[in-house]
Structures are given as structure tokens and as C-alpha cells.
Length: 151
Image 1 (tube, helix red, strand yellow):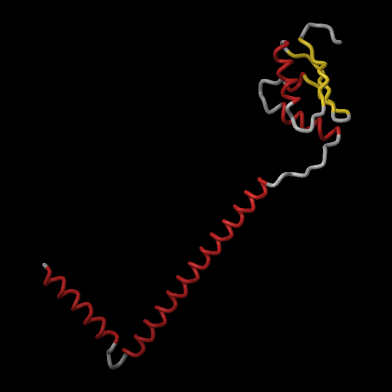
Image 2 (cartoon, helix red, strand yellow; image 1 turned 90 degrees about the horizontal axis):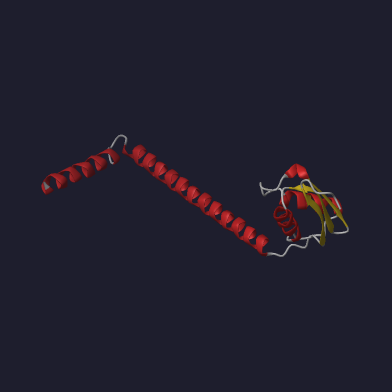
């Protein structure tokens, strides 16, 4: 078995040498092999450079993203309309808060809640959630349970 492999290897090397050193066409064949080899090497080098550049840019982007998240944000305080919209968007993320039954207004950083909710616990939960929102200076809770008189 080993002799067969050695013989096959020797035959392959002999055929390759005969192909490359043929007196009539060997010079052209050697030139073609050299050109193909250098072209393949150039393609491999370009591919490695591209992947290296892409990895570097990916790492730079990831680093910038981390730094951006770590940097404290110096945002200007919201105006009243912006604060009211922010409270609405944060508050209505919770599906248990009825969207059409609460009116939200803001004046000078104070948020006014008006409307009817099902029970006192839900009213207090909504008011507490609004107090936790950054930018809210105070909360005036004018919410009341369904069926009770407004204040």
C-alpha cells in the first residue's frame, strides 16, 4: 500500500516536471503557473486586507457606541409640550394603562393627569409611574374612579 502511494506521488511529480520542462511549451507553461500563483497570492492578500479593515472598523464602531452610552447626556430640559408627549409615550408603553381615558398636560415642569380610571389602585400606580419619569417636576393627580364626582 505504501509503495503504491510513493509510486503515485513520484508519477505525479514526474508528470508535473515533464509538463513544466517540456522543450517546446515548458517556458510558456512555467510563465503561466508563475502568473497564476502571483494572482492568487494578490487575491488572498486583498481578501485578508479587506477582512482586517472590516474588523477594525467594526471594532471602532463598537467602541464608539460603548463610549456614547457611557457619556452623560447633556440634554436641554423639555418644554411643556415635549414633556407631556414624553410622559404619554412612557406611560402608554404599559398596556394596562387605558390610553383614551387619561388626559395629560404639562405646565412649568408639572404634569397634570385628568380622567377616569377603574379603581384607586390603578390611579395611584399611574401617578407613581409619572413621578418616576425623568424631567417631571411634579404631578397633580386629578384622576378619579369611574362613577365618582370630579374634584
